[in-house]
Amino acid sequence: MVMELEFVKIERCDKETEEVLAEESDAFLNTPIKYVKDHLKEFIYVESKNFEEINVDAISLEVDDVFGTYMALFGFKKQKKYASTIKQFLETHLHTDSEKNYSAFFAGDEGLWEINLPLDFIQGFSEELSLRETVSVTYEFVKQLNEKGEVTILSINRPYYNQFPNRRERRMKNSIGLPKGRFKGNN
Image (tube, rainbow, N blue to C red; front, top):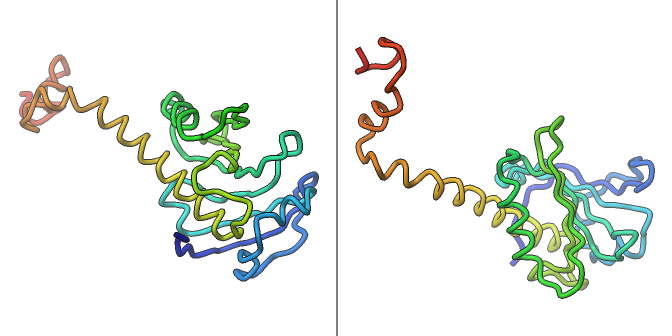
C-alpha cells in the first residue's frame, strides 16, 4: 500500500558535490527506484510535511558505492538515550543473512541520529518499486522505529507510576526533600 504523502521538495543531486542537478515534479516519483542504480553518481532528495510525524525532515535515496544496496539516508530526531532501542530495532527488522550494512550514529552537534538504512533488507522493498513506493516503505519502517522508541520509554517509566496510582500522591513523592513552598501541598 502506497501512503499518500504531501511532497514539498524533490531533487536529483550529485553525490560528490551535493549540487542540485534538477528540481523534479511529483510525477518523477513514479520513476522506478532502479533509476538510482542506473545513475550511481546521483541521489534523490525528498522532503514531505508528513515526515514530521516520524521525526524526520527529509529522506535521500541512493545506491551504496561499496555494497551496491539501495539506501535511505535521513536524520532521525530522537535523543541519544534511544541508542540501544534504535540499534536493536535495526538488527531485528533488517532481514538478511549477509552483513547488515546500516549505520546509525548520534550527531551531538545536530541533536539527531544520522541513519543510513539498507532498503534491500526491509520487508516490502523490491527493485520493482517506484521512488514513491520506496519512500512509502521507508516511511512505514521509520514509523515503526519511532513507535518502538516511545513504547520502550513508556514501559520503563510505568513501574514507577504504577506505584503511585494517584497523581497527587506521585507529585508529593517527587517533592520530598525539596525546600518548602516549591510545590503545592509541601508547606
